[in-house]
Length: 257
Ligand code: SAH
Image 1 (cartoon, rainbow, N blue to C red):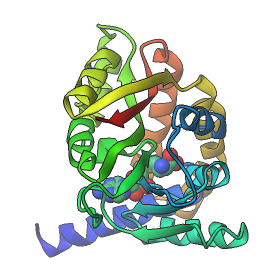
Image 2 (cartoon, helix red, strand yellow):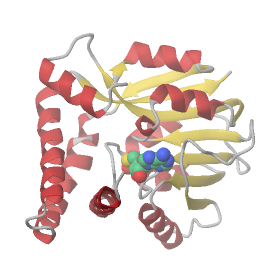
Image 3 (cartoon, rainbow, N blue to C red):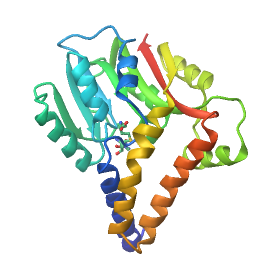
Image 4 (tube, helix red, strand yellow):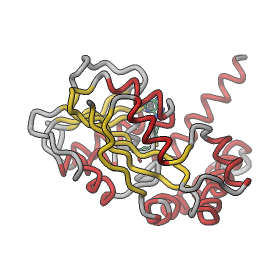
């Protein structure tokens, strides 16, 4: 990669981070869905070690903290997200139990069989569902839980337009039975799976983005990368509206065997 390309890439990443920092959620979700997923998990106490991988600015981390005992380490690649998370943690006086740290979900610094729960909303796709499920398993105690959300198909076949979009964005997208079989193969008993309600996408993710997108385009007027990026985000929202019968986010909850 030339130095010039390197700089362009750095700028893109910084800009995209800035955009997502302005949102409470960096992916579809809801407090209710987080709490529902937690209801399937029965092994937690004050000593429990919980990690939230790809936590973003930490909306779900806070919900986790408010609805579980135990200690939470929230990990994300981007320092700005972690700063925002740690600010919120301070404001809510949760700093004795919750800590945001910069790190990567594919290079974890935990002991084998150490963790009680691995959480990851809308983020495992960054390393791939199968790889994440397999790699993370070793850090869980026997009987520990994994809970993730992942984009999945509801039908065996999809209209070409949405098939093409997802195969470009995330070729590992697949049907729910395929994902469940992958979890089982990776060493989990699959405890539950449920579809996130549409409001997790519409009200909670796409709608708050509308104003942020306007402000962002204003700030970066004439910047091709910024314009392309927002165009993509808007296209993503339109496609969801058109094809939401065919795909969505699924919460998958597994228990290590
Ligand atoms: N869990 C949050 C954020 C989801 S967006 C929510 O539901 O709102 C996906 C997040 O994964 C982003 O914050 C991104 O910075 C983070 N991410 C991407 N690659 C990562 C990696 N290798 N390790 C840790 N975090 C990563």
